[in-house]
Image (tube, rainbow, N blue to C red):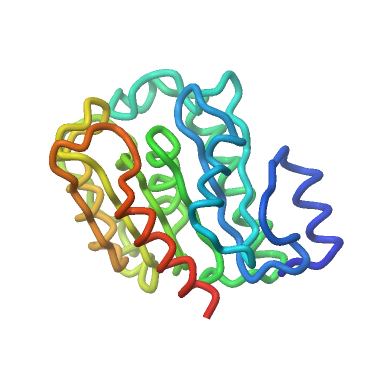
Length: 222
C-alpha cells in the first residue's frame, strides 16, 4: 500500500485512471497499458476478469490513443520521440511506487497489443522481480535482425519476475518469431516466463490467458 501522501503525489503527477482497491489499502499494484486506438478505460475492463479486488489497477491514456505511431517492429528511430515518452511514463509510475515502499513482488505490468509491447519493453528496460508481467499479444520493441541479448550485467536482472506471454501463431500484428525472441530474452535475464501460443486464434486475449493471469495475481498477494 501507499501512504496518503505518496498516493496523492502519484495521482497528481500522472493522469491515471484507477479501479480496484484504494492505493492506501491495496495489496499490490498493476499498471495497465491499452492497445492502439483504445482507451485506459477499456484496458481496465480486464480488472473485472482478473477478479482481484485487493489490488489497485492503474491505467494511463496514450495521447491520440496510441503510444507510438508505427508498428513495434519498425526502426526504433521511426517511433521517436513517442516511444521514449511512453517509456518515461511507465518507468516514472513504477519508480514512484517503488519510492513509496511498494515491493517489486507486489507490482505488475499488463498490456494488450501495442500496450503489451510497451509493458514487455518496460520490464526489459527497467528490470526487477515483478510480481506479474502480462504481455497479451506482444513482444519487445525494435526491428527484426540480430537476436536481442541482455545488456552487459543484466543477465539476472529479471530474476524472480513472473512473466506470462500469450499470442496466436497467426496474429496479423505480432510475428510469432518476435514472441519467441521475447521469451528467450526475458529468460536470459532470469525471468520465469510462461509462453502460451494459441493455434489459429487471431489477435485477442485467450480465456486461458485470463485464467493464468488470475493465478499469478493471486500469488502476487501472498
